[in-house]
Every structure is written in structure tokens, then in C-alpha cells.
Amino acid sequence: MSAADDRPVLDLAAVGIGPFNLSLSALADEVDGLSYAAFDRRPAYDWHPGLMFDWASLQVGFLADLVSLIRPTSRWSFLNYLVEHDRMYPFYIAERFHIPRREYADYCAWAAARLPACRFSTSVDAVRWDGGRDVWELELREADTGRTRTAAARNLVLGVGTEPALPPPLASAAEAAGDRVFHSGAYLHRIDALTAAGVEDVTVVGSGQSGAEVFLDLLRRQRAAGWSLTWLTRSWGFAPLDYSKLVLEYTTPAYMRYFNALDPAARDRLIASQWQLYKGIDSETIDLIHAELYDHMLDGDRPPVTLLPATSVLGAEPAADGSAIRLTTAHADTGRETEVTTGAVIAATGYAGRRPDCLAPVEKLIAWDGLGRYDITEGHRVRTVPEVTAGLYVQNAELHTHGAAAPDLGIGAYRGALILNAVTGRDVFRIPRRTAFQTFGRPGRPGQPGRSAPGGPPPGPASAPPEDPAAQSLG
Image 1 (spheres, rainbow, N blue to C red):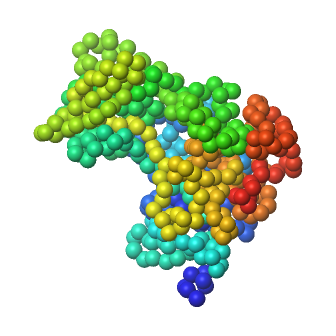
Image 2 (cartoon, helix red, strand yellow):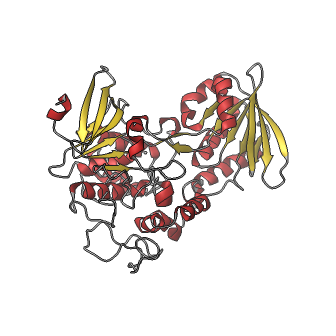
Image 3 (cartoon, rainbow, N blue to C red):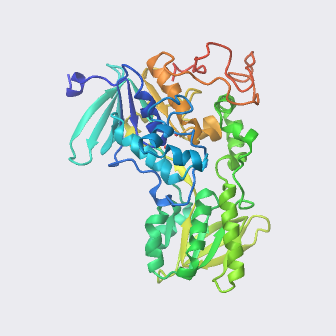
């Protein structure tokens, strides 16, 4: 018998403590009798510090906090955070539905520091399957001491998030050019050094929200820094996030269930066409950029600013002395190739899902699709080989199976509630039935009989979660 056999088995263990597993932790804190722990290698909660602009707002309403869309009476709600910080009346007077991003980050850090199940400075180095006990065995390492130990869990949820993604040409240039080419996720950590280096030209690649915020900040710094600016995107334009009400219903549980029931090819096609649901720029940021550009025009003495839509980067090569980057670009409509020379490149090229290294020992036990992605049920459970009876769940790794709602903060509490109901085997949390006015399709897999109420799951008990045929079932 190993030392781990003598320890209590967790009902649920979470790997990574981002917003979604933090939401799960907040909801789990209210589940009587649940043995739960969440692990993160970082010393404390920290959410996108490289993009934490003082002036930036959250793109979803404050009700998309850790718990409110499922349990608004929880002590971990954003409103309770305001009460504990004596800010309720100022918030009431401010009438802000979209709160400052730094306030949301502070709220999450407040919860993470107080939730007893959150174990920071503890990495999960490996996950193994113990078939004799039907549990996941986790190899843990404490960052401060280097001490290792094991823990066992009947269910495991992965919330390891995504990582910055650089297209191959920019990735190669970043290796060769050092501080002159970097991802936007590190922007606030790198901008002072870029300014001190006296860079004369800066190019931003990518036109999502991060690219827009970086470009706006560079534009505001332009008079003091003296740099010219170029902003290019391969998209047809610097397009807005689609925030219209009926389109927002495509980020609800109702659409998520419909999307999961589609054939994989149809899902991939829809994701490619629905990028403005989660990759566009909010209209407020677009307005601020346009106002800055108008002031730039009135000033008349500032370095030039160039915006290039429908322009992709084919190649990137640092100059021999490291003082500049030569970009080869192509225009989507004309096919014309052009060279752009710039002093630095900030790549707002998004984030990509990653397969955690800790899963290496159990990779062959997991079902992957043809593109190497998790095969995930409606209830966010990863399908595994039959001999694995314990649950494996994911948060924000199911864009390809659940659609644009997967990375949306507004789905966090809902997804956490589904997982906790499945893990406990009972309806601990009431699952919302009506989440959209639109009826997207029939429940279950295509071809199955029966219809749902508009925007709701199949008829059944009010608190019943959607069906999960794989055993009941963010970043």
C-alpha cells in the first residue's frame, strides 16, 4: 500500500485556478460533504496582468461573476465583494453594468485568497490512473519547498486556460529579435523597455480586443514616445464585437446544447463564421480609437499612423543589427505583397488551447478527435476509454464542441454547476431552464424525436441538468 492510499480521496480536484475553476471553487464551497481542492503553481491569483489597463472595462456584465447566474445569494458574489469593501453605494450611483477590468480582477483575487480549497504554489506535475481504486492520482509539488506528494480524486476538472499564440513567422522572429517581437499578453511588462530603447516604429498585428487596446495605448503614448504606428489585421476590417441582444443568445446554455449536438464538421464551420461573437472589438474601444485618430489629425505634427485591414503577415525577418523587423505582408483582396519595416512588433494574435503536460501519463486513456482535441460530452466531460470510470472534465477547452460560449465568463457558473451536480449525483444547484428566446433546434443528437421549450432543455424536473450520456459529467 502506498502512502497515498492512507489519505482521504477527494471527490473532485481542479487543476489550474483561473476564472472558471475559481467559479467552480466558489460554488463547491457551498456543497455540504464535498471533498474538493484546486491547485495552481502560481503563488496567487493573477488574471492577465500584462493587459490590465486602468481604463479597460469587462466585456460582460457584472452578473457574470463567479456565482451570481447560478447562486446570486452566495457570499462569493460580486455584490457581496462590494459590501465587504464598503463600495455598494458608490457602485449603485455609478450605474455601471460593465465594471472596470481591474475591479473584476481584484474581486477574483479577493475570493481566491479566502476560499479554503484554493491551493496556490502547488503544481500538478503528473496525473495517473489507478484502476485498482478507480481514482485519478495526482503528483503534486510545492513551489516554495520543492516537496512532492500525491493526492487521489474520484473526479478531475482541467482549467489550465490557454497560452499566447504566435504565427510561425512571428514566432521565429521573436526568437531572433528578443525584446523587439512579443505577444500582446506581455505588453504592460515590456512597453517601458520598448520606450527606453527609443524605437521609432511600432507595428501591432491582430485586431481583436487585445490588439485594439494595445494600439489605443500606443497611440496615447505617441507624442511622448515619438513613434510612428502601424496596425494591421488579416480580417476584412477592424470589426466590432457583435453585442446585439439576439446574437448574444449564441453564448447561452441553450445554444451551447444545440451546438454540441451538431456534427463536428458543422461545428467547425460555425466557429469559423461566428468569430465576431468572441474576437471582435467592443464599440466603446473603437470609439476611443477613432477619437484619438481625430485628435491626431488635428495635431498635424505627430508621427504617421497607418491602419491596414485585410493584410496578413507572410514572413518576418530581423535586421542583422537587431534594430528593425522586416515584415512581408499580403493583401487578401488584391494578393499584392508588400514589405513593411518596423522597429518592433506586438502580436495580438490570440491564445490557443494547450494539452497540459501533466496528462502525458494518461493520454492514451483519453478520447481525442481527428484534430487532437478533447472529445467532450454535453456535460463538459471528456470521453475516456471504458475502463476509466472516474470523471474527467474541462473548462474553456471546448470551443470546438460547445461553441462561442465556452470562453465567455457568463457561462462559468453554469458550467461549474453542471459539473458539481454530476460529481455529487444530485441537484445541488438549480440549472436554468430558459436562457434564450430563440429555439435553436431539437434536443439531443440530430434525428432524435422531441422538441424543447424555446431556449430550454428537454422537459423534465426543473432542476435536472441536460442529459450527459457519458456518465453524468473555461481558463
